[in-house]
Amino acid sequence: MKKNGTSHPAQIMTLRQVADYLGLHIMTVYKLTREGRVPAAKIGGQWRFKRDVLDQWLETQMNRRPS
Image (cartoon, rainbow, N blue to C red; front, top):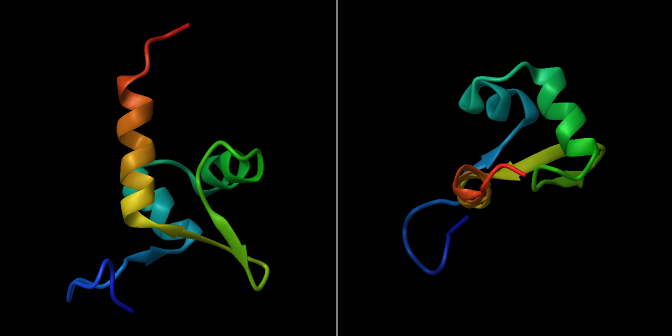
């Protein structure tokens, strides 16, 4: 799979990979995903995440001011 016509593959991640990537417990990521707070797609009954979308979401979260 190619991303934006480049030779770099789009990184599709599983729930466990995202948990490891973010340094969170898998159930925390699962809960946030179910609540729609983490960008993901459910495909064939399993959650999938695109690394670039996740990175962009994380950057936005880090730049938000606390309410």
